[in-house]
Image (tube, rainbow, N blue to C red; front, side, top):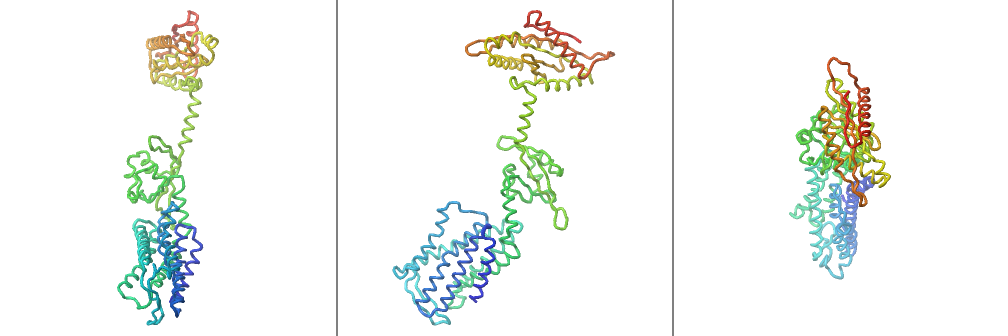
Length: 513
């Protein structure tokens, strides 16, 4: 029977060589090798006929016995995707087993493992007869603790695992209970007298493991690789069944959707993510084309491109969806930055000329279509060339920034302002009559006059000249519209500005179309 069990264990070890790099593969291989050494040593023990030969067989057995529980525990730990990262802690697991081997091999000098040692030849086979030393109980307690810990790990996995991993855990847990049941029978005295049944109990799970490896693909590389890719890929993935209940998710999905926990598996995605209204709406539509969605995480807004892939069974039936969220936050921020660079003047942070004209065209077309009034202001900073010539261009740039800051103190959020030239600014005032435009222009002039720019100990004050062009729709008259109307406003505002300069600057002039 031992020969048969050793053959089965060897076959299992050979199969394990192919998968030793997978989770738990290496400690499982070493676990079975330890059981093999125990069984081979016991074969020699049963065939021995003297105390010396039996004790020699024990030395072979103890190359495996102390390590069986350690490798079993490590197998359970790694298969459950846990890891002992501290090398010192990992090595400490082998401290007692190695000490056991050393004490056994030197037992005649101290008798810490075996007290008295002899041979019992009253049964069908001569076997070792001994009294137990202090260290025997230490090794026994340590082995039982680690073995139980491994069984508990697989019991927990069998309860919480899903899919093929659940089948694996159940099979392994079933196999691990066999040695425990055998140990219980031996303690109750229900086994063959004079025979150590432990090698047989440890070999009995081998058929169960063989079935798990061959039919349940216990160490199959493909599903384990899929799990690794699923968990380590940087793209958040959410798996939903056909009723939009949460079936699975990876850790990156959990980071942006903290509502995801093991307790949410099987719950409706619409209920779990009810706080994310935009995301829920897109889940309900479940369009195959990518859609953009925003999430707020740790005080910042994250942008994702969301796509859904329909999952089908081998029979072609729809079974659910895989929702992939590609992080496009950096691209979005870059586009916003490029848009800002294209629309805003770099120095003054008001609209650049081209974008200002495009924005004004929206208001011009609205007034042309529905009627209304359009005041257009053209502003020039008086004697700006003297500022540059006297204090330098750095001071001139600082003056322009302060002038635009003064404009913002007066303007409404709906007013449109742009830098039209070097020191020229243009402003359109939607929904404003001529009196309102005059008053605002005067306020702008006074605000700039009262603004002082400090530069290298110098106090710089400037004034502005303002030209107003005013257009209002009138019934029964053919009115210009679109680009011609904007060109006309600019032309008339420019005329009014030059009149303000000719009349001494620091004033407002107007022209009504």
